Length: 396
Image 1 (cartoon, rainbow, N blue to C red):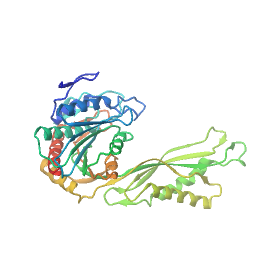
Image 2: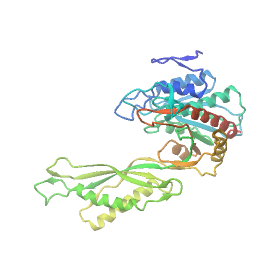
Image 3: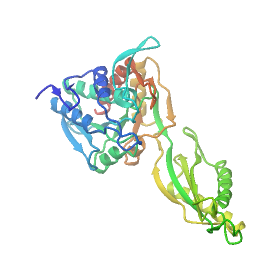
Image 4: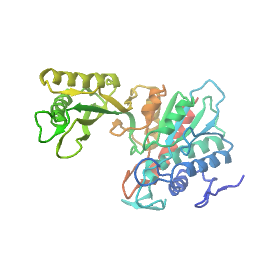
């Protein structure tokens, strides 16, 4: 098999095994998400093809999942002898889109330290490279394992998480999972979920010259917005993740200036904690609306509807995967990593919902979704070392 994978835009070496070189290679492959924004993205096909060639070059069992055409995810498996825990190394291969193309992958300096620049270098091709380097080391050194190592390079995490959903639907499971989001050497064991809800407040359409016939849905929605402001003060708090929250992100109503609006639709985003559920949120919204209707005779509404729901996630600090990773990271970093929750959402919640305990730990850097993105070289190498140790210990 050739050591060079040659997509239409260039050649990328599949013999590379160190995490720094792999970060540079992956960063130079444009895998911007095709559905994330108005700016067309290149998609994940090219990087998926490279990962396939890279895995096959090492004789690693390889699977391609592409339930949605053009949105491939790649799974590589090193089988254990049996009787041990399986570990999933999950990482996303897509990046956010950008109006420019900073895909250089070149090494420069920040604060006197070597770093790699480029879109996706930090989020999260460096973490993916650390997983690949760890996988290559385990394979090359023929490290005896009882459990399987499952490398899952998934598409679309930046938008709808199609890749991890396809992975779970295809039946892939493990006793533990690690996601190398750029955590700046912090161990993440929890984050909030988010839910989008739409609420229609109803009025009566009429010409502006006929106020006796019209009911202004937008003004009626004001009662709902005021009630939401009061409700958010009573939202629950998690001891690790912090308070749940909400905001009204969109409002739409009316057709033209001289008409009473017949409908006003309010979109609410909830940032949720584990004690909240889709059912509890819908119930709370209904109670708010019904309470208003009891005192405001003209107030009418449609049933609240959820348009998107992503669960929160929380793994107890006492869990063996957390404790094992803390001990390994302490050896690698030279100090005990802090264990925290993070503000953003990631695929760890989908894995946890499928019964796979997950942690998040990865390299350091700056510029997530920004014009200049970079990742610290030493932190990539440290992440690789953590993953090699974690595979060796967790899977035996």
